[in-house]
Length: 149
Image (tube, rainbow, N blue to C red; front, side, top):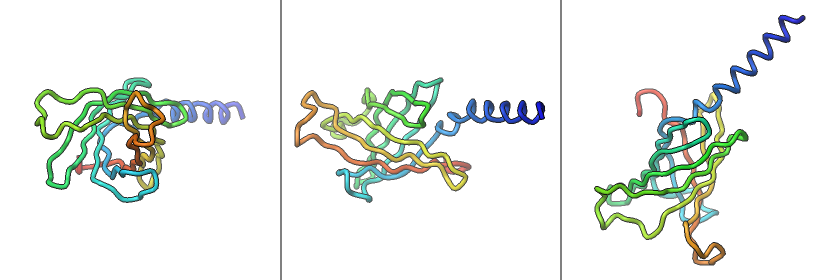
């Protein structure tokens, strides 16, 4: 009986210790321009995890096939939620592609054998927090595994 209890505790510990590893990598999906839309523009994330710190890059695909890339930093929480803010536009980005604002994101990581997902919200980073004109929307992403990366 003690061996079974010890085995269960060890298994739970190992599972919890490896739970964050699935968030690293490439995510593909859409970003919407409102909180109610389900469809939007092509959007990718590349996420790196170091403890509870999150960093990486957002990729926003424009209709003319150009890509806006912005670095981000944030935090991963034990309830499997993630918060991050776009912080830096790469120096080599075309001036015409620089967006009018940066975004911050809140999402929930859902790990599944049927495919992991990140779903959540984004909003414009602005000093006028409660402005009705503040841009916001949703993100719907799926983890890319295997040779697709």
